[in-house]
Amino acid sequence: MENCREASTPIATGCYLDANETGVDVDQTKFRQLIGSLLYLTASRPHIMFSVCLCTRFQAKPKESHEVATKRILKYLKGTTEVGLWYPSEVSLNIVGYSNSDFAGCKVDRKSISGTCHLLGSSLISWHSKKKTCVALSTAEAEYITTGRSCVQTLWIKHQLSDFGLNLSKIPLLCDNTSAINLTKNPVQHSINKHIEICHHFIRDHIINGDCEIQFVDSENQFADLFTKPLNKEIFNFLKNELGIIDFKNVNEFWSDLLTEM
Image (cartoon, rainbow, N blue to C red; front, side):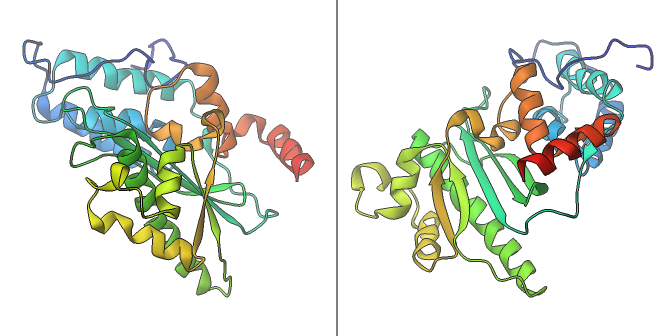
C-alpha cells in the first residue's frame, strides 16, 4: 500500500457493505490484524471511526469487497499522516455534547447507527460510533435512545470535572430531531413513545434536575454526523475541522483563526 493512490475520505458516500455470501474469501487472520490496527488508531483519529467500525462487522467471514473498503481507509491515512487531535490550552472549560442517529443505517439488518461526541471548549474529548442492538421502530425512537446514551456520557464527564473543582450545570446536548427533543420535555406523548422501553426515559429526570439541557441544532452543524454515515469530501472536512481534528502542517493558521473566533 506504500505506492497506492491517496483517497480524499475514508469511505465512499455510495459505499454499500453486506455479508456478500457469494464474494471471494480473503485471509481472515490478515484482515483481523488490519482491523485491530485501525481500531487502535481511532484513539487519535476519531474521523475514521465510522469507517473502521463498519468494516469490523465482517470479521467472521471477510470477503474481497470488505478488504477493498478497508484498504480505502489506508489510502486515506496515507495522505493524512500529519492529521491529529488538537488540544489548545487557552480555551473555555465548557462542555457541549452532540447526539445523532442514522435511522436503519445498517443495510444488513436495518438497525440504526448511533454517534455522539463531546467537546471541552473546542477540544474533542469523547466520541463513539455504534450499531444499536435492536431495530428502532421510528426515527424519533432512534434519536431519543441515542440522546439518552449521550446524556450518560455527559454525566460521567461532569462528575470527572467535579473532582477538579469544575462544577457545571445545564450542559448543552445538541440534537437535530425535534420529536426526540419533545419527548425529553413532555412525557405525555403516548403515540410516539409507547413502544420505547421505560429504561430510556431516565434522561427526563436529569433535564428536570438541571444536569443537562437538550437543544436543537440544524443538520448542517450536527458534528455527530461524522460518526454515523458516509459523507462527501466537503462535509467530511468541515466537520473534521470543527471537531479540532487538524493537519498539523497548518496548525499555526488554525490557531490564529480559532483565537479570532474567541
